[in-house]
Length: 265
Image 1 (spheres, helix red, strand yellow):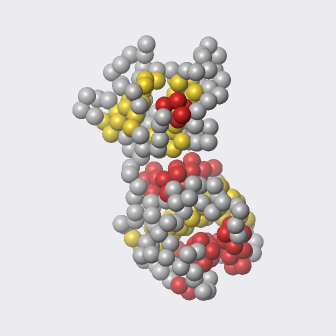
Image 2 (tube, helix red, strand yellow; image 1 turned 90 degrees about the vertical axis):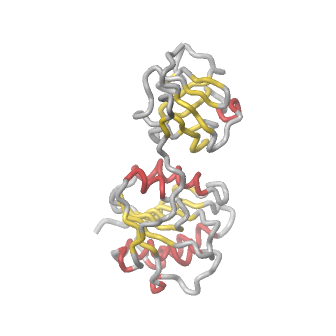
Image 3 (cartoon, helix red, strand yellow; image 1 turned 180 degrees about the vertical axis):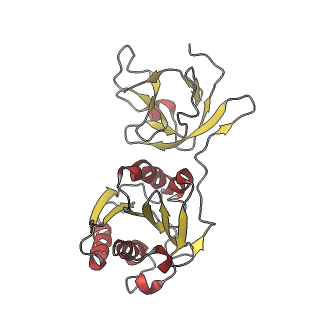
C-alpha cells in the first residue's frame, strides 16, 4: 500500500504549538502518514492568500494526496467543515472559500459536509478545529475511510470571487491582482487564454507593455515594469531586483485592465 500523503497549509506560524498539535493528531490516528508542510506563514485570517497558495501548489502532488488547509477565522461558529474531492485529491478544511479556486478550476468537485462526530478528537475545542476536526478526518481518509462516511454532499459551498476575468463592452479584459508574493510580484488572474501578443496592461495609472520570458532578460532596465508568465500559470507584473507592488502602490484585488486593441509601443 502506498504511504498516505497529507499536506498542511495554515496561518499558525511556527512559534506556537499549533502545527505540532495538528501533526500529532494526524499521527495518532494514522501513524504511517507522511505529513508535508506547504506553508504555515499565511497572513493571519487571509483566506484569499491561502486559496491562491494551495491553487499554485496542489498539482505538484500525486493522486490521492490529502490537503488540509486551516485558515479559519470562523472557527467555533456556524461555518461548516468540509471534505472536497477533485483532481484525484482530497481537500479538508473550513467551508469559507479556501478551496474554491481549486474547485472552480477543476469544475467537478464533490463536496461533503463533515457532520459525523465519530471521527473527531475528543474533546473538541471551539478554537482549534485544525487539531480536533480536520486532522483526524484527514487521518481517517488516509486510513481508507470514504468521504460519504463523514456526512452529506452539499452544492452551496462557499465561493470566493471567481478567478475568471470579465470582457468589457469595448473588448478590453478586466482582471485583478489576486496575490502579491514576498518579492513584490503582482499576480493577476489573467491567463494565456486572455492575453493577446500585442497586449498593453493598465494598472494603477501605469501601462505595462513589456513581456519577458524570465526575470533577468537582457536589454531591459532594472527599473522597468514588465509582465511575465508565473509558474502558477497567471500573468504577473514584476520589476527586476525590486518590488512591483511598491512601485505601483498596488494591493490584492486592485483592478488591472488588458487593453487588447492597443499595439505595443
